[in-house]
Figure: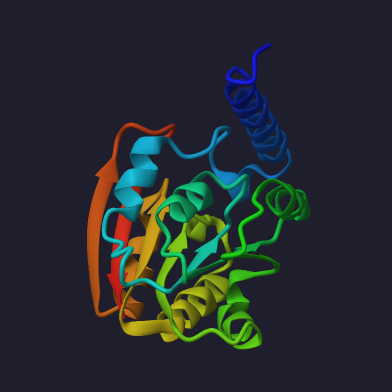
Length: 200
């Protein structure tokens, strides 16, 4: 194997590790993941379409899993910005901490309910964007409400919450919490996904 071959081989090995870890956790926690494979590039692109990368200095991601969206955010993130990812699954937390060695990334083991406390602890201002693919439709109503209201309060007035879901059930809650909600759809994903862009 030549030196030029190594990066692609390593990338393939890392990709297989990602898929294996994701699938294993899907079978353990299907209600938490919703799909046996990570988000498609089409869904990731559509979800992140509204982001103003030049302006954004704080982005928070809920439920990064194996880092499919995280990696795309880091590709575009401003050198002086911070990405905070909050994940409840310890296997995913460990994987992210080992595989993504970027000084702009803060990996938090915890719940999305603690967003404001985590921003305060890290000495960060309000978020420009909150990105979420956690399954709002399967969580208890009081937890869903706390996360959505906490997210709205943790955003800048001109910020946005960018959400993808496999069920449309959360839309009613979004419209109760946020002043403006735009809806979209990405068919090229397994399963196809709804996307929501929410303004405080």
